[in-house]
Amino acid sequence: MYTRVQQAQQKWGGSLTAIDNWLAERQQIIVCYCRLAGLPPFEKDRHTMPSQEKIREFCQLLMDYLSAGHFEVYERIVTQCAVNGTDSRRLADSLYPKIAVSTDLSLEFNDKYAEHLSTRNSGSFDIELSALGQALEERFELEDKLIETLYIRHADNTTAV
Figure (spheres, rainbow, N blue to C red):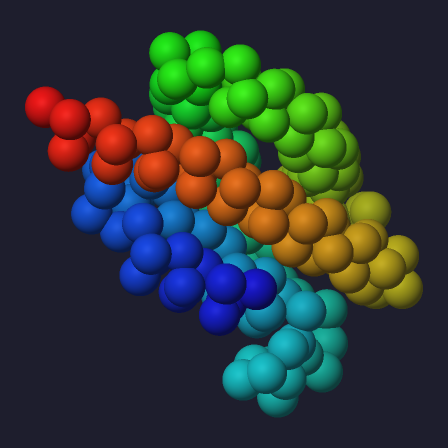
């Protein structure tokens, strides 16, 4: 996941401020996720259940990322796709429902773990965190396809002006 966000930043960085900010947030989510899951290089941190503060921090980053995606980046992508033709619009329309699956999973995770200490059973937490990680990885791949479409069209429009 982390390598993919670095590649995305190198490929599309500087093209649009909204995308730069969004990719920076994605990077923060990945680092925070790895810390919670005890993945390298944070595996030594994961001998016990993460603190409520760490879970809350991750959930807040995730909610901010989802909001920026839905209310800023996706809106811009859909607008550009409408301007740039039906192929781009069809791609956006086909990917958005797939992205929404991870949104629902993220919201459920947030509702269950962000504020409620009583739901913090380590077995179910680990399973749900792992499922969320897989969904986020798929989401990031789909979002990259949308960004690629916007980037190509934005670059075409910039060179045409």
